[in-house]
Length: 224
Ligand SMILES: Cc1cc2cn([C@H]3C[C@H](O)[C@@H](CO)O3)c(=O)nc2[nH]1
Image 1 (cartoon, rainbow, N blue to C red):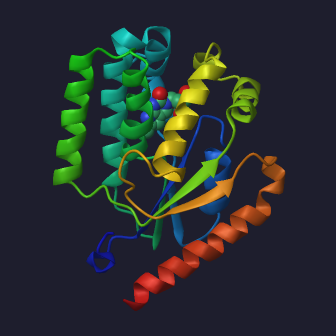
Image 2 (cartoon, rainbow, N blue to C red; image 1 turned 180 degrees about the vertical axis):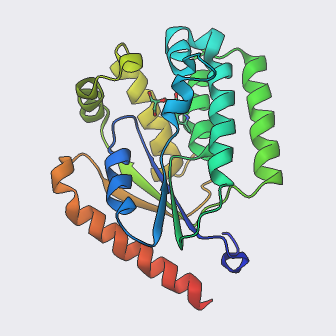
């Protein structure tokens, strides 16, 4: 766990499948005055000096997967190292889910050439070793693939228009192995699991339950 006294804020990673309600979750916490929220920089990925890397990746993942995921890794590292003047720093996803869920999925499904995967993994291992990308708490918005597939299609992000259910099922399984079964990669922080299948307007009680758990974990750290 991170050394709290080096005046790093209490850092929370909000993790979950596409359409699991992360953005809505962050919006709720953005309204609290001691929390800084850092959203996933999707708009940066959609316009990298005029190129839409997200669209390239979905159109031809084996050709553009490394291009996209290398840039994701850079933008997430940028957010991990961003200094905030609040006691809680809440990030939408992390460099960890980039590697353990998304890159892993491209590699396992044979969409990413082995040398591309190796280069990305070497970068990831060096970054984790040489920079502080640690966190204090992971909030896992746990969903089922069919629920998030419906939400994703309803949200109708153009680049995701032909993302099939089995892609979400694979991403779901990778999130489950990492954050629920704890049977795959190392977890950078303790995990708080939220049932995010509920309709977003019923999530208010989950949000306040999370607030209480974050406040409790925060006060424990401050007493150390
Ligand atoms: C950290 C990380 C986030 C992330 C998102 N994505 C995709 C999933 C969604 O379609 C879109 C926004 O989350 O980007 C990805 O392919 N690889 C990623 N890695």
